[in-house]
Image 1: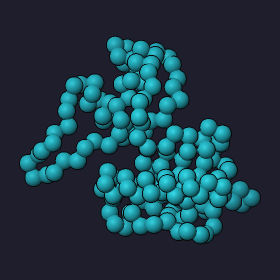
Image 2: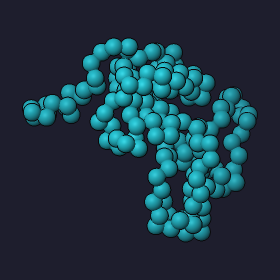
Image 3: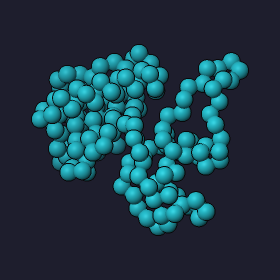
Image 4: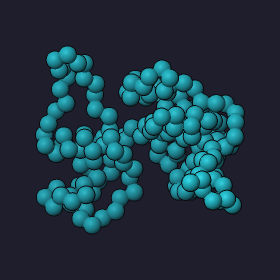
Length: 161
């Protein structure tokens, strides 16, 4: 980002996670704008995301809520160093991003308690905050093959044209 008057950590890199949904709350806070609590013909919902202004000031984000991910049947939740993902609504996978940045080692079988807790939070957020449809909130498969993408996983064969 470039904002000479507002970013104190010029040229710095932060390792605090952020997401696309953080942009609107950040811009709103920068402009001093408030999200309306009523609007003709609509019932506005609170903005998703977190303002990144503390990061611009070189500070840590306090009490960062989990980052909720949902794109079609793909789901995820980032909470601290843990990331829970479900590719195409298949079984949940769990990664410790501090130790496995490339998400190569699925730890779900070793930490079923973390999977259960994070999956419950994913569903709560999907229902209450993201306002996902019933179909989008459908539980993932309990068992099944690990995620594979037909164009990315089979490296011994060329990708289909």
